[in-house]
Each structure stands twice: as structure tokens, then as C-alpha cells.
Length: 186
Image (cartoon, rainbow, N blue to C red; front, side, top):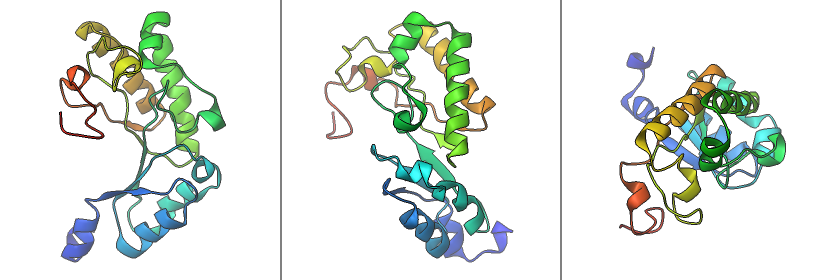
């Protein structure tokens, strides 16, 4: 089906664009008008997760778009006001077993899925011992590559169990950068 589309429509399927978390009108317009292949919901507003607009996105175009968020736990959560908070990656690795992390990620994945989210830009797989307030800090499962692999794998498996696509991030070494790549080149 996609091969028969005009080039512009096929190219639009390669795009994931940020949308306003206040409501789903913008997301629906981008999918229906331009045929974008995905939307990313950032920020702390939760109305878009509760108003049903993200679940409707699956029905407005010929191909359901990916709907992505950053839902890592700790200081990077988007649905904590709706589904309750979960600990940071570092706190999970220090206080839970991998099986418990997989279950908490599956629970979170189910809550994401119920609101229409299909992709979670998590878990963080940086290996870091930065203090909690640093760019990666407690978003990392720790400074041991084996621990990070085991716990990030458990988190990713839990999301997959719930039908949410996990995205392991960031670029290797980000946890040892001298600055914050969200704001400047380091």
C-alpha cells in the first residue's frame, strides 16, 4: 500500500513531530493533513493522555502513527499525575530486582497503551555515576555496564510485554559529557 503513495506522502511517514501536550487537535491535524508517521508528546501537561485524542490517532490515517513519549521514571515522567509516579532508574536498580523492574515497566506500559501511546523513549542505557541533578544522573541505572544492561533490558521487556515499543537511549558516553546536549554541544 505505501509503495503506491506519492513521494510526499511516503516521506511524511518518516517524520515524527512534536505536539502540544495540552490537547490532541494539533496531533490529529498533523496526521490527517500531512500524514506524518509519528508524534512526540513532551512536557508535563496530561490532558492529551486523558482526553482520548491519542487513541483516536490510530483511526484517522491509512497507517496508524507512532505516538511517543519520554516516560523513564524519576524526574522524566509524563503520566505520573494520571498513573502515579515510578522511581528513577538508579533507585530501581538499587531497590528492586530485574523482575520487579520488568513488572513496573509493564504496568507503566499498559497505562501508556491505554492512553494511545505506542512508543516510549526509554530506558536510558547510559553508564554513569553522575550525581542525581546532572543531565543523566539518576536517569542511569548505574555505573556498572552489566547492571545497566540487565535493568535496562528488564525495563524494555516490560514495555514490550505491554505492547509499547521501547527506545534505548542515549548516544554512548552521554553520561560522561561535560554539559547538557539538550542545550548545547559538548
